[in-house]
Every structure is written in C-alpha cells, then in structure tokens.
Amino acid sequence: MREGVRIGFVPTMGALHEGHRALIRAARLRCDALVVSIFVNPKQFGPQEDLVKYPRPISQDRALCRKEGVDVCFEPTVEAMYPSGFQTMVTLPMIARRWEGEVRPHHFTGVATVVTKLFGIVRPRIALFGQKDFQQSALVRQLAKDLNLGVEIVVCPTVREADGLAMSSRNIYLSPDDRIRAATLYKSLQAGAEVIRRGVTDGETVRSAMVRVIKNEPAVTIDYLAVCDPTTLDPLSSVTRQAVLLGAVRIGATRLIDNILVSAKQARRSFE
Ligand code: PAF
Image (tube, rainbow, N blue to C red; front, side, top):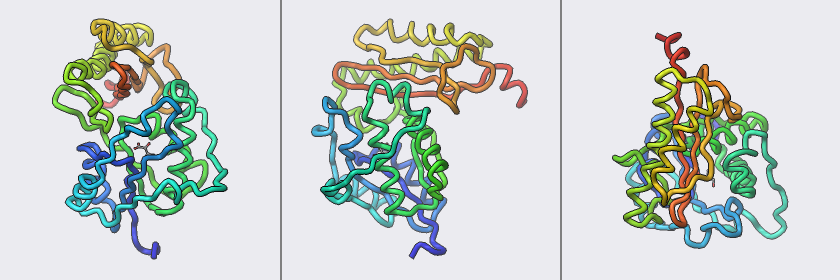
C-alpha cells in the first residue's frame, strides 16, 4: 500500500560505489521505505557503447543494499521492462539536447523513458540522483515537473576519490596510468572555478583556463568543456551569478564526465 508510506527511490544501473551509498543513506533519512533499482538499461546505450561490458557485480550490489538497510532491491529483466510490443518513448526537453545529448544522441531518450517507467512502477514520493550526472538530474527534474509525476527530485553532491576523480561505475575501465590521468578533468574544472572566484566574468576566458589544464595531458582528449547557466544549460558569455562548469573527456576508450557549480565573486558578496 502506498497510502501513508513515504517511498524513497534510488535508481541505479548497479556496480554500486560510494556515490550510490551516499544516495542510499540520504534517501534512508527521508523515507519510510527505500527502494533501489538495479537495471542496466539497454535503451540508453548507443550501438558502439559499453552495454555488453558494463559491470554487473550483482552479489556485491545486493550485499551493499542489505548493509545499508534497503527495503527492496528491484532488479527487473530487460524483457519485463521492454516486452515485445513496447512502443512508447519519452521525447526530450531543450535541456537534454546539448552536451551529453549531442555526443550521445540516443542516451537521454533512453534515460527519460526508463526513469518514467521506474517512477510508474515504484511510485516514489522522493527520488535521489547524483550531481555527477548534472544534465541527467536537470532532465529528470524537468520530466517530473512537466509530466506531473508527483515525485520530489533530490540531487546529492558528487562523491570523489582522494585526487578529486568523481566516483563512477565506469572508473574500473581505466588502466593504472589512465586512472592517474583521470584526475585531470576535475583539475580542469577547478581551474575554471578558481578564475571565476578571482572575479573574471568572461565565459571564454574561464573556458580557456579549463582547456589549458587538459591540453597539458596529451593522453586526455576533450569532448566538451563548457561554462553554463545551471538552469538552462546554455553557455554563458558572462558569469555574473552562478555557473555550472561541465566537462566530458576521453582517456583511451573510457569516457568521463564531471561538473562543478560555482558562484561569481559579486554573487557571493551579495550573500555575505
Ligand atoms: O544514472 C544512472 O545510473 C542511470 O542513468 C539511471 C538514472 C539509473 C537510468 O538508467
């Protein structure tokens, strides 16, 4: 029975790490019954992407859920989620068209569709997502609002390794050398944030500071680095309030994304 029970929900694709643990713990504090879904959603992978090799350590995932007091670990099959005759896909708001949406054209349609289905099945009052996937969180917020899904979306801070690398299930793809190089993405975002904090407002100058850091590491190539409005995700020519610095890079065959939110010097002053 849903009535009177506040269901909290953490949707995942498994290969759970400390970032997921933080979401589960944050959810636990906010609900009566906690559901975690583990479903590697084929509809959000492009044809050349890592669907087949995506890690699936299901026993470890179940153990983590048990330890964290998850009430239901929901593990639907592909056939249950997409039975023969399945036809409906969710189309995307503007916010999903740029950045990840451009580089991975099928991705967000798959995310929007599976999240809508999962919300329909689990009927949560609250659902938690990690800030690491900033554009995904913005998309889910928009979706929940536009389609009146009756679920509150909470976005929790990115959990990082000691050198700043954002935790991700895909980090295990990195070779030891690439793992060291991987921290360059966060360093690049930090360099951009530092320029903003020093009072620079020109978006292109901030972006150049980010690009410079990546160019120092020839094994890392840029998919995009951008200085954006955190609500619309449009690029900012001038940073006068808050900005989100978005980045996606490739290291060997591995693709990493990350972001940080930063307030312009003037905007910070007005809160002091
Ligand atoms: O962020 C993820 O793990 C996935 O995109 C999600 C939200 C579980 C949908 O498959």
